[in-house]
Image (cartoon, rainbow, N blue to C red; front, side):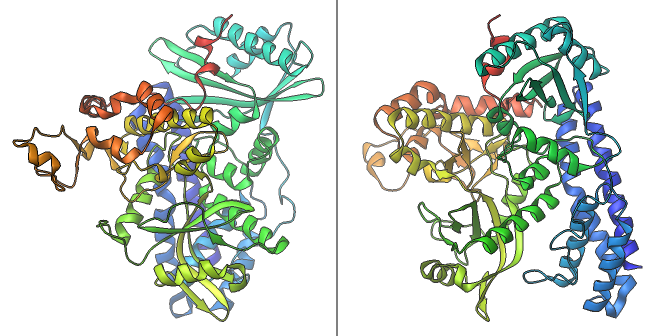
Length: 567
């Protein structure tokens, strides 16, 4: 009975998940961008709501047997049989795990009552239909893309399909020449469903030219004049950035997520399965896959966790395993002065980021509870650090380290370290993108609160992103002010300001002091971003947000946009 209740709850979740996913197309066609943001948040909130409901139901069904392991071992076996014919069996197993962990608050994992590994060595169901559509070679590359665009028509017509198909063909043919392929595309395979996110819609696929496999994505925008192809992406790096861990999740209809992830893996092979599941909205199952990856890495190596490189934070302590490119962030027991946050404040900030448009500038964090590792996996220095600053979160028992709560994120190089170790050219580029990151966050209604370089990092693709959320807030709540004129010269020499400063007051003129840039790097930043030190910039962004404007932030380089390509 419990297994059936969980299966029914999962059905309810999937129904709601698919409703919000399908609705993304209508919101794109009607250009309801604020509605799209609300729809995305509603889909994110759905999992917790359904788990809350099924937990209450299960407690009523099982009564005083609710924490009897044998009962749950039986329920797991029954549940496995109930999902054997499903296309979403992986997500169903993860859903079952979410329920058992809510009931038991399991330390580590318990194979009796959890699907630590999937029950199925191979997919239990055959594919009913390929996850992609195939378009064969046409009389010309342009005609091929006319056919593709026509197959993905919207209720809103294309502004100029013939023009856009010609521009795509020009970009594709240039790519073929560059990689030494044949002059024509033999076939194109595109995912059957359109990927929606923010103000964009994306066709995602792969092209074949003889032995060459070429990743492909067409980025579409719905303008007042009609749908246009804004950009064409034709390499693994561009597709990797499109599916970045700093972006919000796509809304894409798929009956069998396993097949979609396999397809995506063929064009962006360096992405973990976990990241791909997360990027298409199955973040809970992506978290499961990430944990499985970690277990496999531990089983195949003797690597140790160690303190992460970089300045120690006032609020979080951070450790990593160098050969496994993630960091583990734990909230400290006590925060250093002058921090006033509470533990709950920090958790609320992470929740805000989870539900918000990350705009390609905020790291996605996966929240874990009750992780358990062998003590020998930790360096002595790290164990000392954890005992000193996070004793309420970390416990050592029977030669095992138990972590009650942490956030797991992709590891990146802190910006202050990058600027000191990179070439001057790379450092200047990163400094300019640091300003771009602040502006991208601003127009998406996020203010970092703390401009220190150590709170930003540089990805393997050279993008600057923000990862320290304890001072983060909505930009609309900030009060940006000019520093008042002092009445006396001595006021400006005093250690304390001569004017009143409230908690939400910010003075752009002073931002420079927190950045710590110097020399050519500082000058390059000023050349591109001097407006960040002017209160007028911040007020103008706030005015746009108040007016309900959703400002374009493109997940691709300007050079990929068709309007900037030479024909």
